[in-house]
Image (cartoon, rainbow over all chains, first blue to last red; front, side):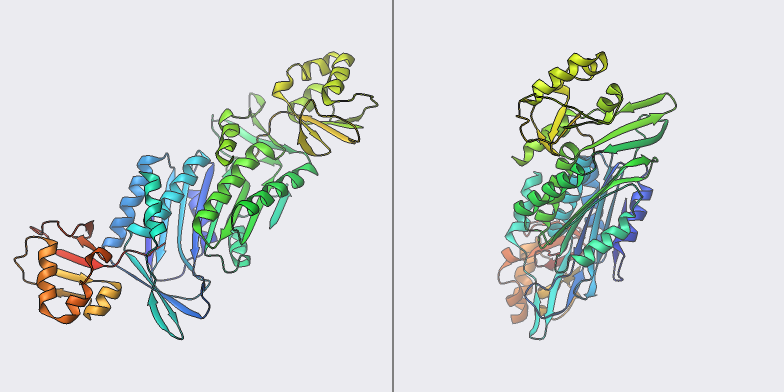
Length: 147
Length: 147
Length: 81
Length: 81
């Protein structure tokens, strides 16, 4: 299990390969990559604030929960903070298992919980100003899938 | 959309990065990589036979179905045939979307259908001999999730 | 028409494809003709519930008609992915 | 105890953290004390249903007791991922 909270960019492909190589004996690897997108047009950059100390703890707890629920060979979470340009990777999750259903479910679960339970906040900066991204009701509702 | 059926090895990390770069504007990319694993111990290699001509058609139809069901920026399927060593990548699926739920569902769906509806057959070769891998009832049952 | 065999069906029959002249109206009739030929065909087709059939490279059924079909393929359930 | 603010809560109050001496027994009591201080606190805490609280870096509730807690953090719902 690897949890990284970092300001610098990461290479999703390099991380996927390193993760798959470490997860020896796992036949199924699922990855999710989140990328900064310019939804409304005019995005200059995204600022991500987080709560150092709590962030790592919260993510580790979420990963531990996933490992209890599914049979995983390994799991990976990388999440960036600071200033991110459109098209840049924000975060990445990977889950390795002997069985594809476990790898898919665990990666999906990790994403749902990271969205709403890890202390990150996104702000979109355009020429008109800066706005905090509002939490979506959908994201909170998604957690009930795992009750 | 890209469908590749090939004998040669592919690099999952390189493919993931190229796919993400092409899927401009998609904030969510989900990938699945299948890797040859030595379940029972003693696997020398895996042989994958396929039905040239039908294979590409069947995969393209499955991808088209996924694109009808979910809002996807792009989708990728790579599947190898021939002789594969333990630890080698067998196949890969990727789905890009504006929304993570669509990317996850589409990748999961593509895997379920590729398993049971694309004309590939696996044979495991050990020192004791060679055995065709039997289809699992679970894999056929998994398709009913998408009815 | 061309008849193709894959995986253990190919191994049991001993060849990957052959040209078959037939008046069979359905896949089941073609299977019956092949089984009557030789023991290796009879063995391969003994349990068609364990087999799949594709007509012109599209999955089909054993009771499907063969009119106009150029390529028939028999194989076990797929195990890709 | 240390009180921390994140995202728009931090911006509205105008600082990321401060030391607060308090006898408040619960988070709600601490919020009431802070709101009584100045308008910017009152504005930030006007609708606590739009806020989350963490006690010693673990998500908690506004009616949770503060006994033994060293670090309280207030912030809007998370939007990571």
